[in-house]
Length: 234
Image 1 (tube, one colour):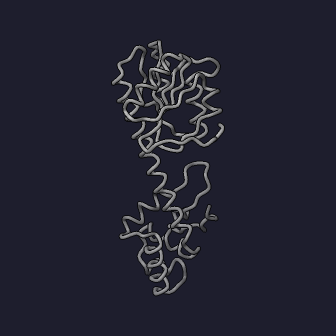
Image 2 (cartoon, rainbow, N blue to C red):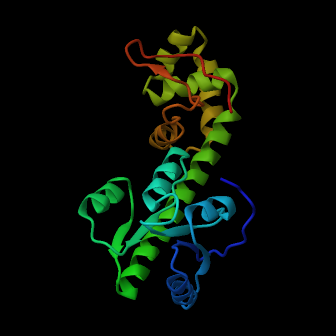
Image 3 (cartoon, rainbow, N blue to C red):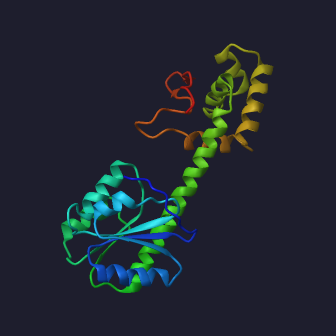
């Protein structure tokens, strides 16, 4: 997907993909009437060539389109790990298609003609969901940056601490003095900006990499309770 820059507002942007020009114009007026930015596209190809989300948004997507279908686009976005909320609109009440779209994570599936308020409510939910996703990602990246500021030895202590080991146990595992453990542990808490052990554990959970991505937190062999060497920081 071409990632050309697009200017948007904090309230959100609605991306409408529908081959009906009259409908696109009507939806543009509707969304702008409540202060949302709108960009419209006549096909999936046009959307993929031009659209980029750089602020909270929602995709209003017709199912049947010339060329690739709305469902095709939903699948491609998922494969690219682009988590844009989608509200499907369709002129046909096709149960299998509806089920497929909703199982794949669509916010709503509306059959034309639909009430304007139904669409507005669905889009509002989509934009709010996107805002939450972005906030979680920002927080996760911030925590990862803090973790990357730890020295290799501090990262190892981090791994032991979040397992619940006491300082004496950590000293024994790492073959270092108790005082050294306390110093490293203090540095970990300070650099991670953790006010408690519980908060540090939550941070460890949040920085675990998803499947297929290189780990940035120390992986743990839970059978032996020994942290493995941390992988290089991204």
